[in-house]
Image (cartoon, rainbow, N blue to C red):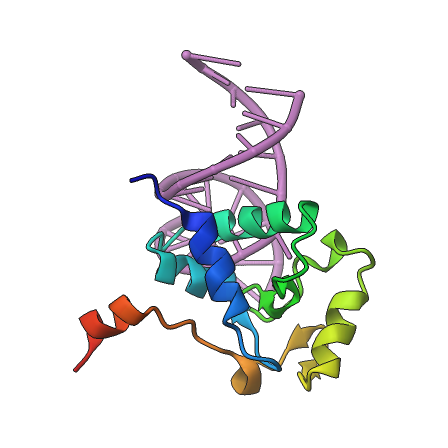
Length: 115
DNA sequence: ACTTTGACTTGCA
DNA sequence: ATGCAAGCCAAAG
């Protein structure tokens, strides 16, 4: 079957708890394309263009915690403001990943890695 | 159909 | 520490 990577990406992003963030790389890893972080960005871009506000794409940051996609929002400020509203703390221009990094967990993947 | 680029990440120089 | 190149998938020109 064709890889519905976008569906998976959307699903994962929707699962990000409030006040948490994740990175493109982690999402990509969960959906199977370990080095396909770009694809995640593309998916979110499509989402943004399709007005899929259901998906909290503002909780997805790059591996440094920087809001790489902030400029793709209505305004470059709304992203950070939303995160701050949810209780996310920032260190300079980046999210405090030490406190708010959420690792997406695929059920099947969890079974595979289960010890 | 081929080339270029993009909200990324990693590695080597 | 900074900079360039490669790798990955999909979409647009």
